[in-house]
Length: 437
Image 1 (cartoon, rainbow, N blue to C red):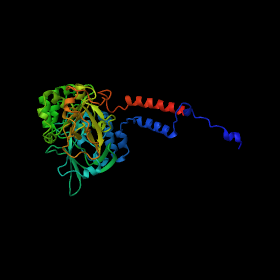
Image 2: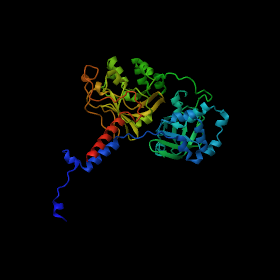
Image 3: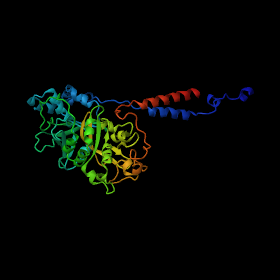
């Protein structure tokens, strides 16, 4: 080799010329960060396409496809269990011919076959002796009497057979689960059953076009049979009228503690002794000013969600941290962590969910976590750095350090917004770094 070529100085890299050096690994990390900031696309399940892959369910799939309003209800939902009737059993079922169902009534019968909870085969095998009450899509319409839009699942310990029937004491309609047909984990399960399930007391000829009315939240909670304390507090405080007035537009989502949650409060939490204004704030802390079905809560993009109390007390305060833990929706206030235990009511624009604990805002109840039960395994611990009552936002102190997510009424199912802008900025940075290197 020529000696001059050996002694030829190396050409400085563009990055060295500008006074800094960027390794290939660093650039790769920037591109990886960009990919991580791109929100995943939101896709709705096509339930008829999913069922059409099972030839033995072709007649049930045709019924589902003919119920256009039902398909619209299903388009934005997940975490469901569907009870489908195989062709041979459907052909032997005389309910359709005997009742001469109108299209609207048929849609309601099929809604009764859509359970608003993801149930695996192991969940059915683990049913308690008393059974399990699960809300169906029919309950969300407001056309079912009492809680007869729900179904009771029981398992015979001797035979292992799982039966599903109305919670009404003398309902003649019941079905047996035949098999697991298909499952998409934590999204949808399809079970084959041996008959159509007819809702008890439903006027099968009723028109679906009846005008929408404002939901009576207090009555809905009383009908739920496990929310009497919350119903009394809401009625006495007067804030329930505000909630019902907010049902229009973006809607509302309520997290309502079960009766046992109030009984489990430690003596240091004198909830009933709070002044009326603070008690009203605590109740508003249980409400999001947007309609979020269960599937949206399970896939929430921004875990810190503003509440009605946020709107009353100031941006960044009184937010809820919503996440998914071990297949359930967990709600963390900073000092209390609760889980969603059931769906009480779910029809756009109102969703009501039962929760295992009273959601105590740290802005009112202080710094120290309040532990009344074993926390969910794998759940993030409550935040120790809570505000003391004397520093509560709106009560003579400064707002908390949390920043409010943009758009109080932004639907959690939308994956656009600020995430896209951040991704674009990061992308431009990566391109610039690549050109420099």
